[in-house]
Structure formats: structure tokens, C-alpha cells
Picture 1 (cartoon, helix red, strand yellow):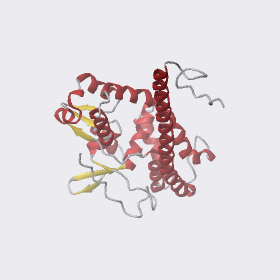
Picture 2 (picture 1 turned 90 degrees about the vertical axis):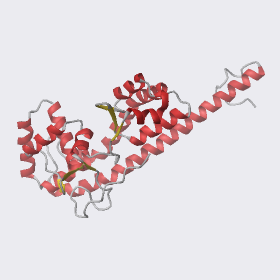
Picture 3 (picture 1 turned 60 degrees about the horizontal axis):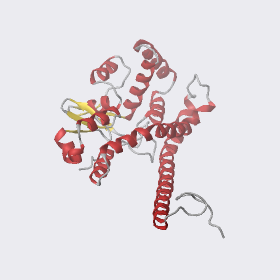
Picture 4 (picture 1 turned 90 degrees about the horizontal axis):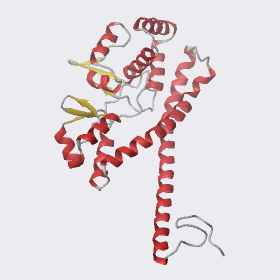
Length: 284
């Protein structure tokens, strides 16, 4: 599979990404709608109402970035809580009038911007069959759609994480049943959600010193944005480190249990002190 080229870096004076931070993702209007779980029609409507800034024009193509993603996520969240577009428009106008717009966009992006730089990729059914073989059954595809790993797009499918899809295809080719792999994702997801909640709390805890129903003072926003951008990648390092530790521990436990079971079978009985695989201290 070919890798998607990374987006071009933005200028050094970009207000939403401080110096040294990872360059922002860039999106077409279709990609923007997909990653924010909205529609192109809604994107256009929000632009017309002044809720969303227009894209950067590159020739005839409009290019969006993570400032648009974070603003759309905020709009979606407020709509889900029962606010109308008129309410949201009044709120955003009040915010923009009371704060430096550049700093507020930077705060929105630091908190609500995407953590992944992957871009969604469309796959035909034939491409999925080539990747997964006969394991890409209708039931497996349906389960992947239910889990949000794939999204139907007419006769095609869209993956929000082509890297994860390729990893799943490789595991399936190594003999891991696709149904079991999808079950594992479903079982693990609530735990990942809990970990993500804890880490997001760490990242945005910088806001706790301010009133819950008020934005930070404009003078504090630039330093706050810098701090959040510094913490975000460190949270990902923590996740990877802890996941590696847990995988080593789980695999070591499994291997020990398996070897103990084999020994018990060959000896014709369980080791002294309990059943095969029990981690008792050997008697001296």
C-alpha cells in the first residue's frame, strides 16, 4: 500500500500551531465532512452563516485544516446538546468579539484538533478482497462498519485509518480469524475510550484554573496553547509505553501458562502447589 504524503507545513507564524509543533492536517471539503461526521452541505451552510471560516484557495481547490475540524466538532457538540445554529452563532460572535480571534482558533485547535495525521482512504470491494481474501465476508464487512472501522460510500468503503486496515489485513493473512480480530477491537474499545478520557483530562487540565463557564483571559491563551501542544505528543508516548508493557506481560503470562500445561501433561499431573500455570513460589 502506498503511503499518503504528509501535508505541507504551514508558515511559522500560523497562530494555531506553535513553533516546533507537528504541521496541521489538510483536507478537501469531502475529507473534512468525513472526519467531522457531518456533510458537505452542512460545511457550506456553516460557512454561509459565518460559523466556519472559508478554506484556503489553491487554484480552484479549497483546502481546510484542523482549525476547521475543531470548529466543526464544537458546533456538532453544541447541536447535540440542544443548541440551535442561531444560539451557536451568537456564542461564537461573542467569543470572537471578546477575544483575539487568532488566539481562540489556536486554543480550539490545540484541544479539539485531530490527534492522527492519517487521511481517510476509499477502497473498492475488489481492493478489500485483495487485502483480506475470502475473509472479507459480508458479515465481517458489516461488523467493521458497525465498529466504525469502515464506512459505506455507495459501492465502496472508506477507512479512517488505512494503517490500521493494513495491519488487520496482515494479521488476517497470518491466520488470525477476521471475526476474532473484530471481536477483540469491540472488547478493547471501551478500555481505549477510558484511557483516552484520562489522557485528555491531563492535556486540558491546564484549563482547570479558570472558571468552568468562562474562557481564559486573552493574555493567557498563547501560553496555554503552547502548553497543550507540548503535552499532546507526550500523552501518546505514555500510551505506547504502557501498551508495550501490558503486551509483554500478557504474552509472558500466556507463554508461561502454556509451557506449564505441557509439562503437566507430560508428567501426568499438575505441579506441586496447584494447577498448571499457577505462579507459586517454588519450594526450597
